[in-house]
Length: 145
Image 1 (tube, rainbow, N blue to C red):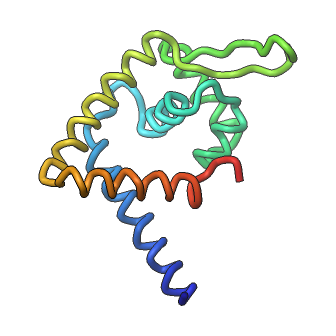
Image 2: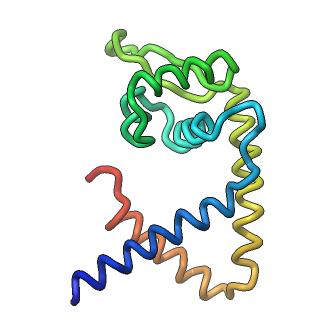
């Protein structure tokens, strides 16, 4: 296998993922939060509970800026910090009930857009896509590596 051509396919694929993500999520963010704050909430929603450093690393935001944005989100009652029972020095972050409700609404609208995008796919194509996603998740996008 030509590894350079394979890598270029990955680059093209990840670019397309970013473009589709933009299409699926444009105009989803509420007006009273910034794009960075929405991105943080989205990450927390799919990975909670998380630490400040996990958010900082994943979103490529400095720790002070991440802390500042989380403070604003906490003040807006969209997320909350809590102590870890085994190590009270460590704090975890999760969505508040209001934050969870907001993200559930956002994901519902994103889901509707996604279903519209794949509406013409056959059952066999949907099964093939599902299998491909499983392989990509386990071999390429595995977070444990």
